Image (cartoon, rainbow, N blue to C red; front, side, top):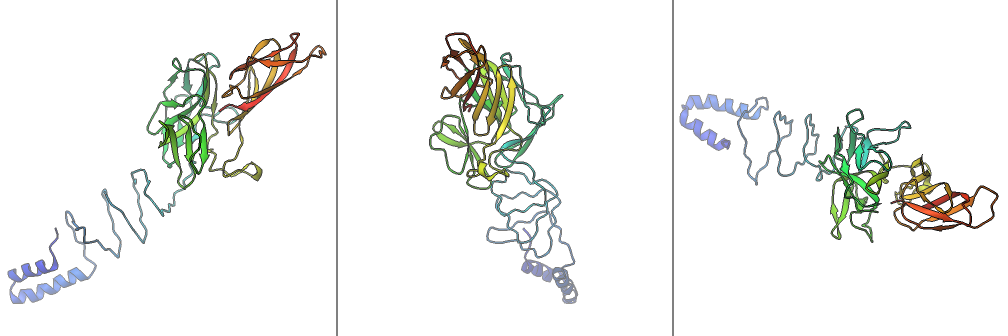
Length: 357
């Protein structure tokens, strides 16, 4: 502990003669009051009832560890790294340009149209989920709801040998290089209040405050989890039937659209993917709604281009050959296929709409 001025004066008084005292005391006074002299000590201890007041500048060249709070009315300049999750920071203004949208993938592999393309698979063949990350592909950068940005050079594959048929959200948890799959049919909610009728492993982005918080439904309660959704996959017979990458830098909240009619409580509904495959075409919206269509022959099973989350969808058909005039009926509805029935094996254009997730 540093000696007090009183201690210092008593020590000097004992050691110096009267003449020396007069000469040297003035030097001590000048030294302590001039503001031009540095004081170098090994350590400084301040009691909990005391304080450190500095009206000038304070330079710290080493590490500064603070277990309590730092309060400043001036400027605090940091050339190094501030560690921690930042959850307690308030009133902070940074000159750095923070350009990462939270709760989303920010950059990664893209297709020829510049759209996000993270899943590497062959439809109805691949028995695991592979990722186009690292190696010959770009690394992936993503930011969680709290604003922590991470870059990975690889993501582990996910084996589907124990996965039932269904549609699954694919997401990364904090500090993980392996993905997690939700339960079949799980949803992502983006709203300021907790969802009223959630299912297990549903994800909720809480938009009631800035910054955001993300939760996952576990054991009947919402548990805060720093997760980032990558997209969703449709599994059929333990194989990848289709996989969709979510739009980069889009979380359903931190967006501005030119069309106000599409905005509802900061939750715009936009098209996230339009594509075709051997089974037809489909258009997928950000809220999980899906429209799809193609051609089919009656009295045979038709597989959807992308699976619906349940059988609460609608299918209509229009006969387009033979000039036939007969009715067609839908039967054998599943989440992945349906059948048209008719008296003859007529061909039809079909159209279906419902929710994919």
